[in-house]
Length: 126
Image (cartoon, rainbow, N blue to C red; front, top):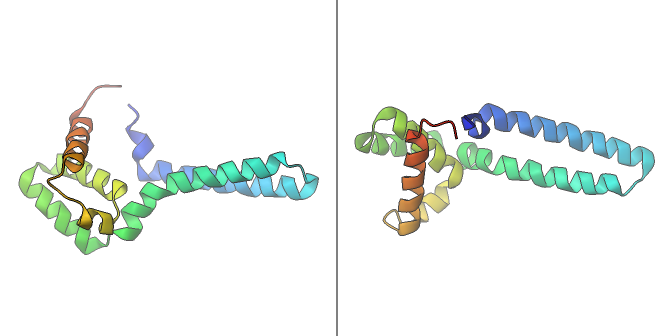
C-alpha cells in the first residue's frame, strides 16, 4: 500500500517541495527577520538531506557497470522481479564502497536481505 514512499518519483517530489519551502522560508526571514524562520530553514534542510541520502546512494555512488554486475549475480540466485526489488533496496541502502567492504556472509547483511525479501514478496496492504 505504501510502496510509493520508496519510489524515485516520490523522493524527487519531496526534494522539490523541500526546496520550495526553503526558498519560501528564506524569503519570509529576509522580510521579517523572525527567528522562527531560521528554525524552519534548518529543519527543512535536515529533511531535504534525509530524503536525498537514498537517492544519492542509488544514483551517484553506483555506476551502471557495478549495478549490472550485481543484478546479474542476483538474477542467477532469484527470479527477475524479486531481484529488481532486492537490488533497488541494496542500491539505496549501501554506497558502492560500503557494499564492497561489507561482509556478505555476515549476520547483518543476511538479516537485511531476509527483511528485504519479505517486504518484496509481501502482497498485504500493511
